[in-house]
Each structure stands twice: as C-alpha cells, then as structure tokens.
Image (tube, rainbow, N blue to C red; front, side, top):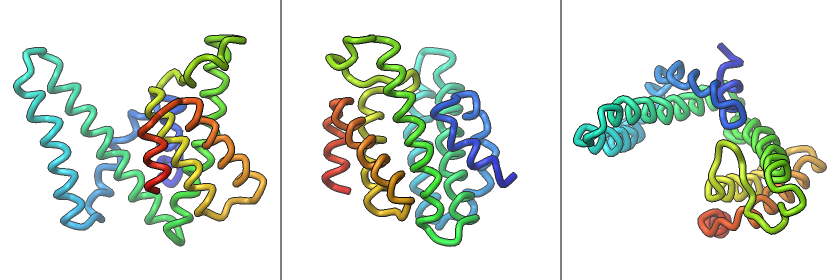
Length: 178
C-alpha cells in the first residue's frame, strides 16, 4: 500500500493509473472538518448541475470526476502522513513534474517537428493552461524545497521554460502570487 500514492502521482503520465484514486478516499477522514466541508461544497458544485443535464451520462461522468479529485486529495493526505515533514511530502511532486516536462517537450517536437518553436507547448493529456500551472509549480518547488542542486537548477529552468512556452497567463499569475 506504500507504493500506491507514488503510482497515483504518475497518473498524469499514465492515465490508466488514475483508476487507483478512489482507493484513497478513506484517507480523507484525517482532514479537518473545514477541509471536509470545502470538499463537500466542491462535490456538490460538480454533481448538482450534472443532475439537471439532459445527457444520460452527465451524472456518472461527474461522479467519476469527483471520486478522482477526492481520491487525489486522499493520496496527498496519505503521502503527507508517511513523510517526516511537509517538505518531504512534496518532494516526489518535483520528480513527477520533471518527467511531465520532458514528455511535453518530446510530444511537442514529435507533433510539430521543426515548427515546434512556433507553437504552444502541448502534452497528450494536459492543456497548455494546465502545463503553465505545472511549470509555475516546478519553479516554486525548485525555489522552496531542498533537492540536490543540479536537479533543483534543472527543475527550475525546465519549469520556467514550460511556463513561458505554454503561454499560460494563469500560470504566470500563479508564479507571481506564489
């Protein structure tokens, strides 16, 4: 069970691993009542509109999305509980983001070839806006966490490159506010 949170952390690279997310719903019990209330409001904000949608699959898909997000939060709680400090709980995220950056650069090059420098950065499973947020997160992790200095430098530079090449204004705002 100790490797399941790390496997779920690789879900952005290998989407079928996302099916592991509901296994972590039990870890949500460790959260404070305020956090659980906020997650409940989120779940209602996704599920209630789906109840009124005319499409028959709207509610089951919304329920799957809610279980996935709540499972990811539960996986974060499980990773945090197993770490000796809050920064230790965030360290695997930097390594996962590094792999995501590499796959984004490779996917963009394989799609556009030599014209890749004239296109926004892309990834098979993420939008350019999401890539921008992940680029900002990589820069912030490189600044605040104690990785080995070569990896720290590489994570910060690649995160900044992903942020700029994705042309995400939201990611740039997140970096400025972070």
